Image (cartoon, rainbow, N blue to C red; front, side, top):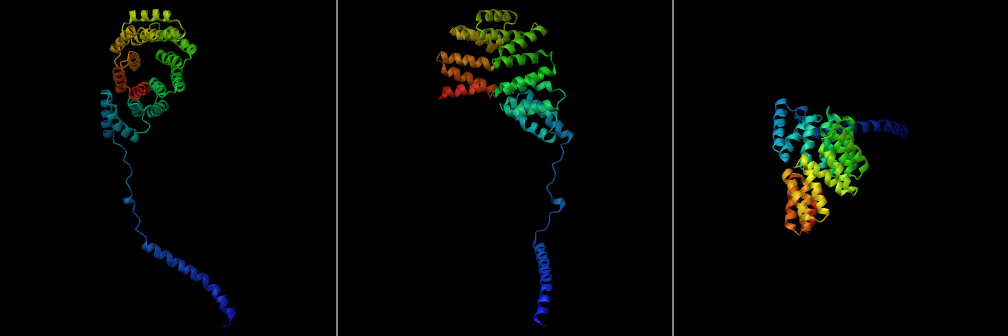
Length: 303
């Protein structure tokens, strides 16, 4: 066979040899590979929670919430939402739980979700607005309350919350507008009158505010906000004895009103009663764990 014929045969045999080698290599690899996991050995999919299981967890959460054991309520509530992610009741549970353990961002997430999925979104608007305020987002707090007013324009509670948020933000003109609107709808709504009294103070009309507050206390002697604001008037007038009198009455009337404890603690600092002030800030953190005023003031005192 001459050299030209040999070359032609080699050109024909070479691709065939490569193909046969490739097939042989694939067969060897397959033989040495670990056996495939059958479908029966795959991890089981998470089973849907049964009605009995969800009812049991739901009962646990309700008991813990009633007993104000919010940390204990967290685990069963998370299990419920894991199984039923768009259930409004379970979503509201977590908004409430996170709010009460001081995790306001998480609370906001669940309350915002509740607003989107619930047929009665207005239920959580007060706490949603308050949670935004707790983390210093007053504009979002105002927007949340405005949503409540838009949902129910004659809901005096929503009107009050919105007016108070405007007042907190220093938007006194808007605050007065909504306080007055609320009083028109409900003339006996004391908190609206309290709001107007506070704005009188900001406007430098302290005497008028004091008269208004004293009238409120005649109608409702233990009104904590009236007691707090009158205490503040005397506090800023350096009449500490009178201020303490009103603050202590306010605490008796509203034992978990953090603002009164904080003002009394600030008064204690003025009077050089540092250990008393620390105890008052600690008391606030017992029922309002995420209160930034109490946390910052207490840390400053312990330096």
